[in-house]
Amino acid sequence: RRQPDRHTAEIQRVALAALVADLTEYEARARLVPALTTPLGLVTHATFVEQVWFHHRVAGVPREQVGIPETVDESFTLAPEDTVVEVRRRYHDACDRSREIAAEHDLDEVFAWRGTPVRLRFVYAHLLTELARHAGHGEILVEQLRARRGADEPDA
Image 1: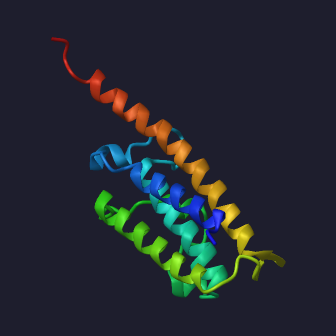
Image 2: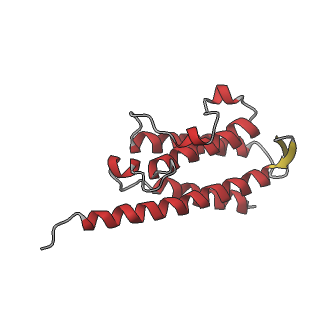
């Protein structure tokens, strides 16, 4: 039986990874809003989301061992050596590991979240809303970046 939560999560994972597919390194890091949100930062944050929910909460691996930042803001921060290729690779690796972890559990299995028990189904719902929201943010940023490409070209 196909699990709709899992299938829809895959659609959002693909959409998020695709945000930076045709951007230059400069464009991927461009800050078009006062927040830390950049196209590449969104993919970095999505890696963090996968790791927090599946690697830490569902698999039970301590945050320090997973290697995730302490704050959400830090999850958008890019290191100088973070490239589009490297950030996308880390995201794909995190998603692969999340799939492996989730495959070991039933959608109705319960996990702790801030002192409240939640089902794996809730984890998927949270992941879906988070990824969809950020994919939407990213699409707007990417649209603005693509519009700039044409504006920078001299008139013929």
